[in-house]
Length: 181
Ligand code: SF4
Ligand code: SF4
Ligand code: SF4
Image (cartoon, rainbow, N blue to C red; front, side, top):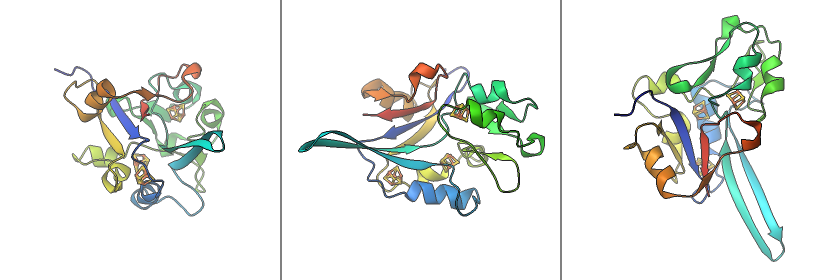
């Protein structure tokens, strides 16, 4: 028994090669206009030469369990949906940007048509029983998606077996985007 589902993405920083196929697949799947992205790649270099190490992270909205963007939204456009996924209802969004100011992850932007955009965990695909577009396209299987409350799920098993971290834990948002390190 898994109880209430909690959709979670697990990103394996040890497998990612920074090819950006995930970013491009997301743009195509979700018809994101030129110049904008719902996901992005961060390359973090640590140490001092010659003892350098790099971490590649495929980042997007963290679908936070305690999402400040949902609390900040005055119209209810930003809300929780299946598996705790944070969604924006376009025709309720006034483009006021209160959610953008509240997000510690810079995960949102204003679409040229005036509503706020961000990653949806590709819920339209997940509801059809498919994986998010970025997960499906990744050539190195760096991205994993599923219900972390189901102990048998791949994401739960990866998090049980490997060291992981979340970003901006201090912000107290309880993110659902984990990075295997
Ligand atoms: Fe990394 Fe996979 Fe994205 Fe390529 S598609 S950048 S390997 S997460
Ligand atoms: Fe909201 Fe930002 Fe958390 Fe996404 S990452 S749920 S936009 S606070
Ligand atoms: Fe884009 Fe879907 Fe991946 Fe989110 S889950 S980054 S919307 S492809």
